[in-house]
Image (cartoon, rainbow, N blue to C red; front, side, top):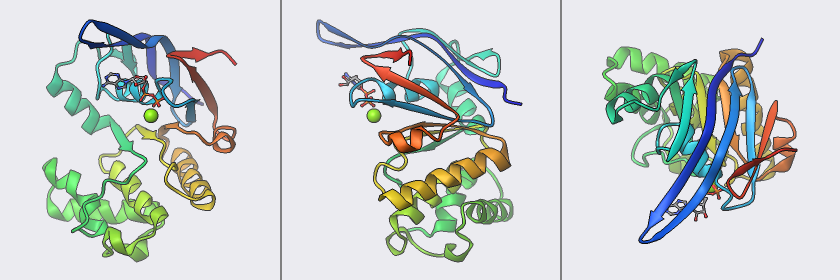
Length: 226
Ligand code: ADP
Ligand code: MG
C-alpha cells in the first residue's frame, strides 16, 4: 500500500532580476507516494531542478504549499527547514560531491558526526549503509580509487545517513554510462522495496523513466498531462 508522503499544491516560482520577472514554475501540483519511484522528466530549462529544490525545502516557492505527511512546511523558518531536511530527506546529485581526501566510510560518517551521532554509532551506520549499496568491499577506498558508479553509490549511502523517508535525486545517472545508470536505478528500486522510502528522480533517460512507478513530465514550468 502506497501513501502520499509529499504534495506540491499550486507551486509557483518567479525569479526577479532587475525589472524582469521570470515565472519558471506555474501552479505545479503533484503527489509523491511512499514505496514508489517517481520520475520527473522534461527538457532542459523546463523547471525540474527548481521544483526538486522546492520539494526539498532548499528553495522557497513564490506561492503555493509543500505538504509533507500532512504537515504544511510553508511557514517553517530556515532552522526548522534544515532540521526537517536532516530528519526526513536525502539528496543525490549528478555529481557525487564526495570529499576527495576521505574514504567511503568517512564520507558516509560525516553527516552523522556533524549531526552529533557518536563515533561508534556513526561507524556502524556507515558500514550498514555501504553494505546496502553493495560496497562492503570498498569501505576504505577514496573517491579517486572508485569507479563513477561506485562513487555515486557512496553518495547514495551518505544520503541514507539519517534514514530518510524520501530521497530527492537530480539526474543521479546523468554522469554515468548506460550500464551503470541501470545499476544505480536498480539500487534505488531495491531501496524503495526494502527500506520503504520514496525516491523522486529527475532524469533525461526515458528508458529509466518508463520503469518508474509514476512519471511527471514538465513543460515550460507546468506538469504536462500525458
Ligand atoms: P531544468 O532543471 O529543467 O533544466 P531549472 O529548474 O534549472 O530547469 O531552470 C528552469 C528555468 O529557471 C530556466 O529558464 C533557468 O534559466 C531559470 N533559473 C534557474 N535558476 C535561476 C536563478 N537562480 N535565477 C534566475 N533564473 C533561474
Ligand atoms: Mg536541472
